[in-house]
Length: 110
Length: 111
Image 1 (cartoon, chains in turn red, orange):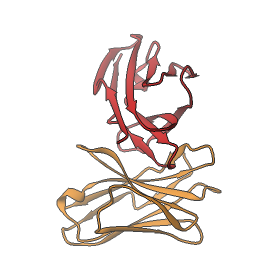
Image 2 (cartoon, one colour):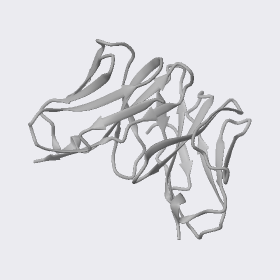
Image 3 (cartoon, each protein chain N blue to C red):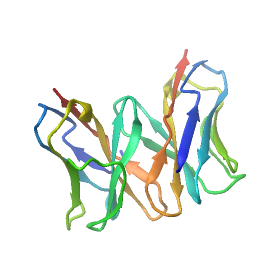
Image 4 (cartoon, helix red, strand yellow):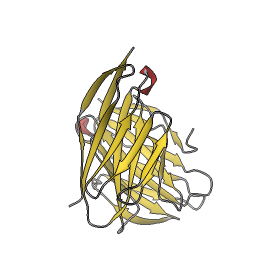
């Protein structure tokens, strides 16, 4: 069974304090690893897709990396506006739907 | 703005009732997905339609059903509602590249 596990469940950072979020996955036939940001009461907002081990993508203060078993979302010098829940999801070759992890709730204090 | 439109945004109803949630996908997207998000279970895949036909089914209860119409909008019907059905229901549509783009959700409260 496909499984996606995110850690930590919650993370408190001071503004400017860099850190990483982890997404571990067990799937048969990875089609892609997806990162989303979700603000309270809103729909998930697409950030990145990673397709193969070693791939990296960046957007502003966020950088996503992928290995054969996990993905990391690195946040460099975060700002309070980066506070949100970050979700990772896997897509498998057998279908187009995504299986989501439980998310990491990030809180950045000024 | 993802381009996916969901109505209503909020819905309050009583146990045993039936509700219909509506979704319009992004222009040009043929696939529509429905997800349920509750506090204790995260985002759970319910069902996918592609160009009017059911393509995949997840953990969707028998009391729930969905359809996609010729104009590609989709409806999720929830019947015999229970307290535990209270959740955010999201619709998403996808392009050929596989990313899902989500609407703002419909918050259902069952009293």
